[in-house]
Image (cartoon, rainbow, N blue to C red; front, side, top):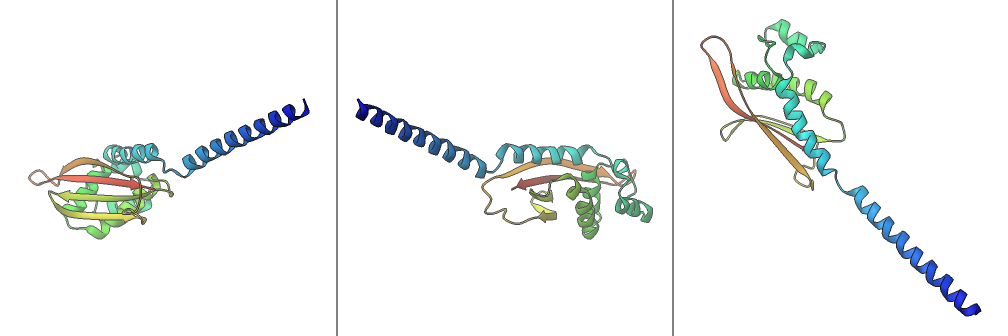
Length: 168
């Protein structure tokens, strides 16, 4: 009778150990997996946000106020992406880069990396990348939008394709 209890206890201990190790492996594998859905939502949210927020809505930003005062931003009714497109049209790439840093780095969490591309067909007009590892990332999500705008009553620019890529 003693031997049966010993084998039953040993069998229960082995079974419990296997279950604990299995659960630990599953949880550990999940903890290291990149957050694919969060990255996908972030990419789409960023493109939606910068496509809808107008420049006057970020007037609490000192850099944006300086650009407006200097005459580099002439229409505060432009969305953030439209303003970047206008900077590209006017070939103001350094201004576009600084504007992107001021605006996008406040929107995107620091643990994520991103790239913003503005293209005219296959020609890249603007390329801003924050972070490294895009080519080695297991999860890279891209969201696109079309932008165009008007300089004055007779001059229009675009359509350009804007693309935001996010990865972790």
